[in-house]
Length: 338
Image 1 (tube, rainbow, N blue to C red):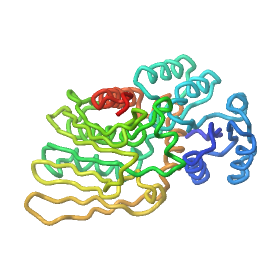
Image 2: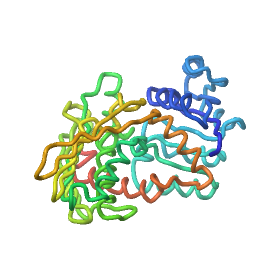
Image 3: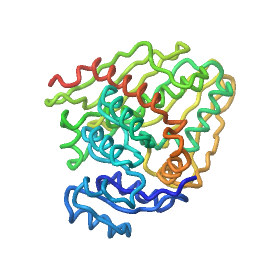
């Protein structure tokens, strides 16, 4: 483990969640925060007792007391600031999606490689014990041969969120904001079922309701994954629906009614996976998390910073997911106003 001094590049809601995680972590400290508005940076620093507050991202990246940077700007800004952080010699944890397109992600990865720094996309749910237990159950054959996956993440955005989420220039829409979790999870299930390190769908189709600005307000995709696994993935920013995960196999199915991306599961506590055999009664499997998921994420970076990539969220994994998102957005006609 390497103890890391963190700089927060942006001071929004997700940065606050991560700051709480760093406070809980075993190998991280909060060193600085940067925002476009100096007053906002100072207020954020006072809230979390952060010693330094900067009114620009450039000043944050110039701070020699910052080892690693957490990028949580709007999606469209991830690429430029992740590259700038790498060029400043900082290790990078960038909130999902790493970039808006796979081509942009390749540029960020090239910058990390050229500057010999760590880079990871911030899919914190992948590190939760619930997700890891799901993988173990599938790999062990608990439901037999996996045949189908259904997963959904959808909400009705509030006015504060709506402006960002409605703007295609900022990477708005549900697919990039929360549908990325659904593609990631569906692919993870296929990886556990097939034993492959990284998989991508052989076929991607989809439909969506597009807004007047051309972003997807709610969307559904269909993936054909290796092993002939069919996945239905649904997301939205203007529709509340029941979030969850179901995995169907030849000898039963698994259900997670509260996936690890749901807010209450970001803190320590107990969650459930429901295993229903084809010829038996449901079994509730309790999963205990002794550490908040953002704290776990910060410590995961500390554990693997010397490797430059994290094994569970490798650069190949990031590229595979973004290529899938590219195809899903193309299938629904993203960018063409309704």
